[in-house]
Length: 119
Image 1 (cartoon, rainbow, N blue to C red):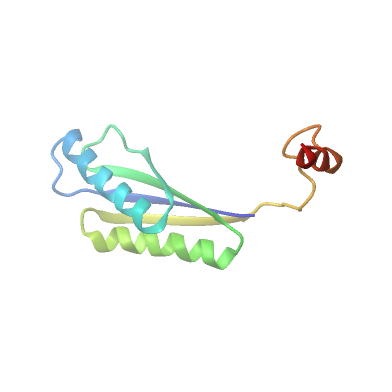
Image 2: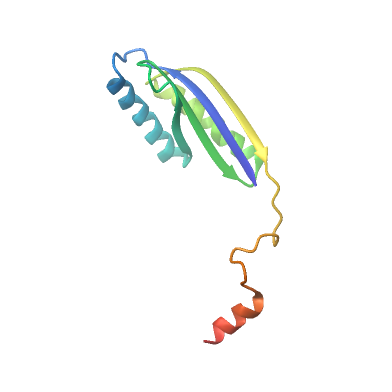
């Protein structure tokens, strides 16, 4: 399983209050979620009026595809022109996963499945 994460630091020039900043961040996060189906959260700068740090995450089976979707999401945030992207870092991890090693229901076996289908 491939897991990717991006940290995006943004600066909101026209914000003069936390309420104004929250509106911009809410707009950015919703648009990114809707367009790219990523998890997005504000992970830093919550107490400042103009600075925010967004965390984005994606999971998949292909390293190139996961990295590409995160890069496209960062580019999309820049193209929105709601905030200036000051910094962006992307990391992609390959977590080990082998089929058949995890039993989703302890105590459930193939023999039980056949018995359940007969009922």
